[in-house]
Length: 177
Image 1 (tube, rainbow, N blue to C red):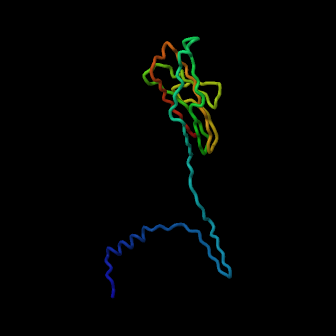
Image 2: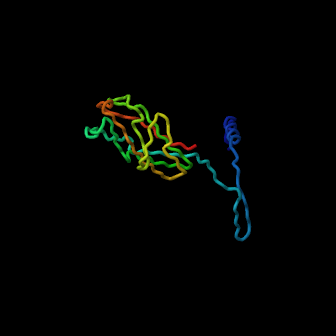
Image 3: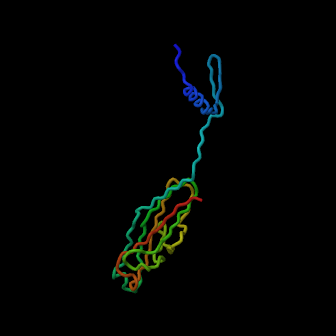
């Protein structure tokens, strides 16, 4: 007995055959008592993009506040907080880590100068003034894990730094050119 084959079924089969793509093949053949065959041209490929990873710990750090004893000699003092942040960098190419400050916020003196916060890296004794522009903190080569410890020195002025909270947003940016 012959089955019925409709025109729409035939059309679907022809269209499916027409849309199938032929993949390139690597083939070989061999005969004999112990045949062996290794086709040439078999490979895998991919493209790896530049990869960067940055972790800053802790995300928020409480600066050391001045006390009355800090202002005995004058109306200005500095407080040092070494090891405040640890930046961990991973990258598969050369990289640059920048730091950028912003205006102080909080309930204290919001006109406090951004430059009143200075930073140093890896426990150094040389400090750099924080600015509202991105400034290179450090650079490096491809690495599975480079750490940079960032410390701060904050200048406090008794006459202008009124009671309240002081917060400065910091932007750390890791880039690979």
